[in-house]
Image (cartoon, rainbow, N blue to C red; front, side, top):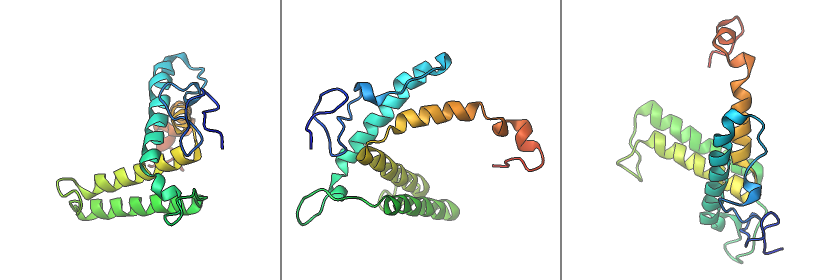
Length: 159
């Protein structure tokens, strides 16, 4: 495996990318000038956080007996995110405090767990989650089915 990022030449992480904030590959090409500050700040920041979270969780990406990298099962990883969301629902439904961080609500701690897992997936698979999020937010802002009128119409999205 190459030890340098193909985008900027820096040392790479287990995802095969450097994950640094200013790597030219961490941003996205943006065409809406009114959201360019969002692209410049949000996409690289999210990708940098994903790389950091992944680097903190590489133990789950290698065999504990040999230390060799393993191929993670994407379906399994997504279901682990789902299990964290189910735990968040349970905490919210019952109004519980977290058992490991007792000064915090279980709801927010389990949402944090889900976010950690999502960011680890993105960092581990070298996804441009930040760029995809910025683009998706821009797309959603223009969707007709997201307007109040569309939501209030018969068959409209209620939530």
